[in-house]
Image (cartoon, rainbow, N blue to C red; front, side, top):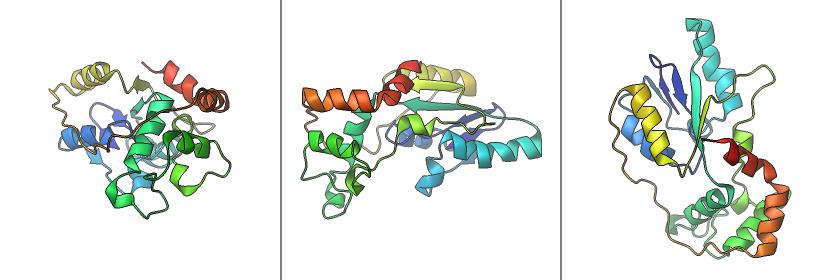
Length: 197
């Protein structure tokens, strides 16, 4: 999470949407930087609103606009799958090294999810509290030019991104039946992505 006080902007870090690269490029420019633990670095809209936004409301009588990035849902799961197949995950309950992407997505659709497929939900990340403040600017991960243009205009600076946190290459094949079930059961994920800029 990055907060730019003068510009009244909070950049929330949806996991697996390139947030690490933006954090590295902008941490020196931000007024408030949260890089860990993961529950705070990746605080969803509700948690940000309840704790962090409340500080700005109570102490400074202002609110930060919220921006975040959302990834196409199957691509997002593919990123998690590849990330959890790294060498340092082998033997860990989260490892996906020895399963197919289709098996990973099937496991994601179970309730409860097994540890290796329990990666949360982008649509849930954007849920607001009943009296809360939602995200003002949500960008599609694939629209990097729009994200960069928005941030460069808002922060009045040139941003140079470097690739970070790159996961191993893996085959991301899904059967038509698995994809159909996923799209039906998790349509909220696609609605969330479709609504982004």
